[in-house]
Length: 125
Image (cartoon, rainbow, N blue to C red; front, side, top):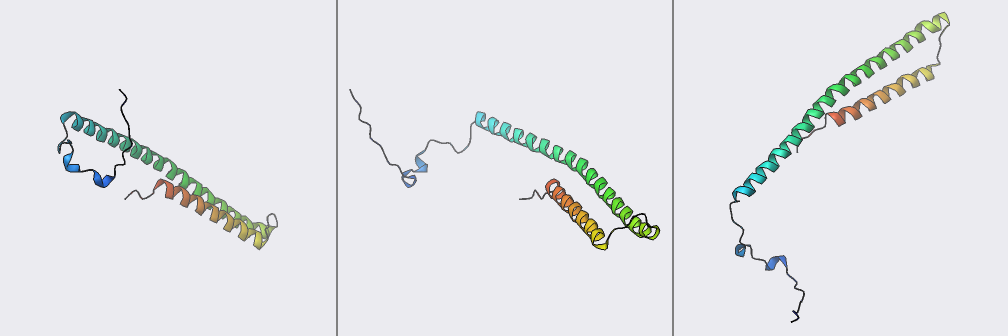
């Protein structure tokens, strides 16, 4: 005996949800699985937050050291320019001095902003 198969086009509007056999309250097994899912999700989120805090501490210290060394470097260049040109052992053209100071300042600020925006991003939704 050959059964005839024909395609049915069922629209979403044709489905009546009141006819379904889905209970309003989940059974115990479903409830346990859902709570287990939520617990695992929270564990993963907590692990991610702990890692973020560790990375924030590590990289905030590195950013601080980088900026301190940059300030020391700029201070040394300015001192050398001031005293070096007086005693003729170090001299930079004003354009070169401005380029060095501005270029490094912009780079340091850009690095700082990129790292800070990544590490301390706003997670509120």
